[in-house]
Length: 282
Ligand code: PAF
Image (cartoon, rainbow, N blue to C red; front, side, top):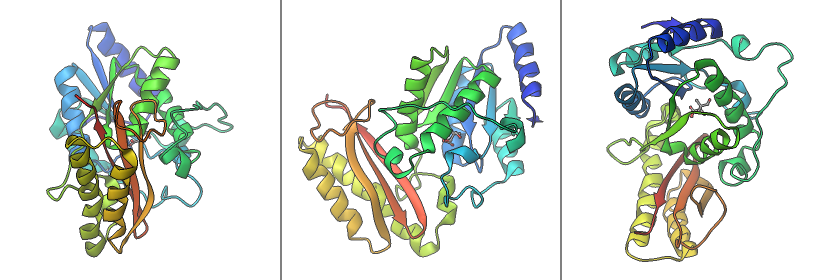
């Protein structure tokens, strides 16, 4: 697998592809790739002539005391997965390649970033928007792929691309789950065996909420109450938030009369996990 560490190297490659008239897809990741990422890469490979996977643990999207240093990293395994999935290039820059001394330009967004994860992690989306817009400038892709597990992130990036006239199609891809329902995440590796079993409560609780909506319940308070009760019954789980918001403007909305995102963040021991579903009334 071709691993490129420099911005200049990626640019030269993309220019060569463009000269051949090829369509380029980008899959931005923080590495430690799993089946969820693989599904994004495979989709990108289907829809483009060449696919770049970026592997970069972005320091500026982690707050003080968060897991930037502990975040799992394994570039060789990532490169193998990318190769198997049919990617053309891995872009794995060092922090100094992405953030030079006196780096001082950030992409900041209001509104869509303010609820859910934006409340618990106040500088997170500024870091995400900044790095994703840098990756967009570096790789200049036709389209970019993001998982719906980070549904708010997907909404934020769509808004950023629209607001800043980025000529890039943003493609959202479905959540990939373990057999017991737990959404795949690089952070699942932090869980002990006992915590791993407990973590299934998150998707179980959300499915119960979804069933209520599918059966005609429209009162968000009742749906959220049921989800919170199920999670609270698990002794190892601590709720950060369980919320219903409009999809995709991410405003609190407790009636399922418009497309809504029901999203949760839950601490299982010292690991914070997120999951969600989108409900659209037919
Ligand atoms: O979802 C992620 O892995 C990251 O937030 C992203 C989009 C790669 C930006 O660092």
